[in-house]
Amino acid sequence: MRQIVIPRHGPPEVLLQREAPDPLPAPGEVRIAVRAAGVNFADVMARLGIYPDAPPPPLVVGYEVAGIIDALGQGVATHHLGQRVVAFTRFGGYASMAVTRADFAFTAPACLSDIEAAAIPVNYLTALVALDKLGNLGPGETVLVHGAGGGVGIAALQLARLRRATVIGTASAAKHEALRALGIDHAIDPRDGGMAAAIRRLTAGRGVDVILDPVGGASLAEGYSLLAPLGRLVAYGASSAVRGERRSWWRILRTLAAMPRFRPLALMNDNRGVLGLNLGRLWDEVPRLTPAMHGLLDDVAAGRLKPVIDRSFPLDRAADAHRLLQARGNLGKVVLSVEPP
Ligand SMILES: NC(=O)c1ccc[n+]([C@@H]2O[C@H](COP(=O)([O-])OP(=O)(O)OC[C@H]3O[C@@H](n4cnc5c(N)ncnc54)[C@H](OP(=O)(O)O)[C@@H]3O)[C@@H](O)[C@H]2O)c1
Picture (cartoon, rainbow, N blue to C red):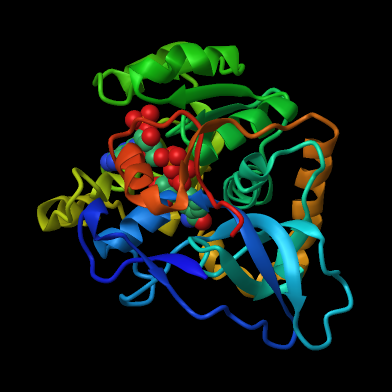
C-alpha cells in the first residue's frame, strides 16, 4: 500500500510518500481500501511535533477515511466485504489502506461522494459533542463559534442552525460572504481587534450562551468574559500555538502562558461553566458516541447536513493540503483523494 509518513517533525515538506506492506485486520477489525482521507488541524500539529497525543515519528497521521471494506478480521459479523464506509482511524488514515475497529466504521451515506463522506467523522462528531453533550445548546440561544470557516466550524454552524440557535462566528474576512450564504448570523474577523466589543454590541451587552473555542491561550479568558449568565465555554484546541509552517517555541510558550486558570468559587459566583473536549481520547466511549454518529449520518442522508469541501488533493500532495490549512486558506474541509490501484 501507499502511505504518507511524517519521518521527522518539521514543515510540510517532510511529508513523504512510501510503500508499506498491506496491513492485516486484527480480530474485531476491518480493513478499508481508502478512497478519501480527511485532513485535520491535529495532523498539522502532529507534523510540527506539538500534538501530545501523537506517537513519535515515523508516523502516519489521519483520523478518518472513506472507502470500501476489503478484509474482515476474525469475529467481525457486523460488516461485510464490499461495504462502503466512513470510519474513524486512530492515526494511519493518510494511506491507500487502513485498518480500524469494526465499530468505528459506519455505512457511508449513498448521497455523498467519497470525498464528502471523509469530511464527516471528526468534524461533525466534534461539533456535535461540543454543542449538544457539553454546550447543551438550546433553541433561541446564541453560540459563538471560533474558526467558523474551518472543518469543525462549518459543521458547528450547520448543527447550531438545525437547533435554531443564533450563530456568531469568527473567521478570516475573505470567508465572511460564504459563511453568510451558509446561514451564519454574524461574522467577525478575529484579527481586527474589535471582537469583544462587537459581540457585546450584537448581544445588547448580555453576552453569548455557548462558546466553541479551538484557539486556546488568551482567547479562553476573553471568551469567559463574554459569557452570559449560565453560559458555557467549550475548549477543544490550541490553534494559537501555531504560526507559520515551522514549530515556534515562542508561540507555544506564549499560548500556554496565556491559558487562564478557572477557579470553582468564581465559576459558582459567575454562574458560568468551562468544559473541555478531546475527541481523540474518547475511543473507549464508542458505545456512547455511536448513536450520535448514526444521528449525524441520518441527518446527512435526509439532506439536513452536507459537508462543505474546500478542495481535495491527491494523496501524494498531502504537503499542499497542510500548507493550505496553515495559511488559514480553507473554507470548509480539506480532503486527500486516493486513486484505486
Ligand atoms: N479537541 C478535539 O477533539 C478536536 C477535534 C477536531 C478539531 N479540533 C480543533 O479544532 C480546530 C479546527 O480544526 P479543523 O481540523 O476543523 O481545522 P480548520 O478549522 O479546517 O482549519 C484551520 C482554520 O483555523 C483557523 N485558525 C485560527 N488560528 C489559526 C492559526 N494560528 N493557524 C492556522 N489556522 C488558524 C483558520 O481559519 P480563520 O483564518 O478563518 O480563522 C484556519 O482556516 C483546531 O484547533 C483543531 O485542533 C479539536
